[in-house]
Length: 189
Image 1 (cartoon, one colour):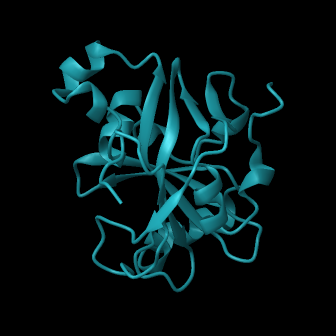
Image 2 (cartoon, one colour):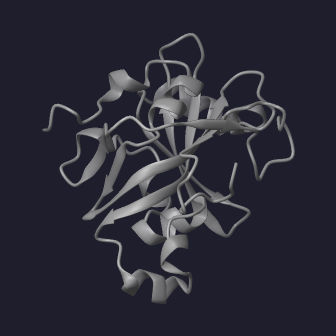
Image 3 (cartoon, one colour):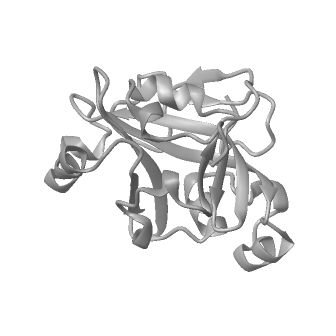
């Protein structure tokens, strides 16, 4: 294990802090890797955009799983979305991975298969999971200590914040974070 690999202790903080600090980190999944360039934070309590607000199963997930566990769900029956459980600080919640800048193992083969341009391959939470082959089977996985999966801290990057997108409730919170000049963002800030 590399000393820069994150373990569950990283995710014992506020979801906003984790979401911001993950920008620039390297996300590895089964031979593919990308730099995290966009995230969103969600609070498990009093956040109407979080699954815990209206799904008892999500509240149970927060209670039962350790920090750093994968929370993967099917969005509108179309795209799998990858989140990490944040728990143990003042506020529990999730960090949604919105976009990656491909580093390794993500090739033109995947862009042809998914019919998107190379710079859009991991631009958006649904495209990200499609490119990495993440599905509902990863839900609940404690992937941080897995040999072929994990997150490694990278070089610090400039980070912008803005309102979360793609939701209809809780839109006023400035809990979306991203690398300002990255071509792989799902939407510019």
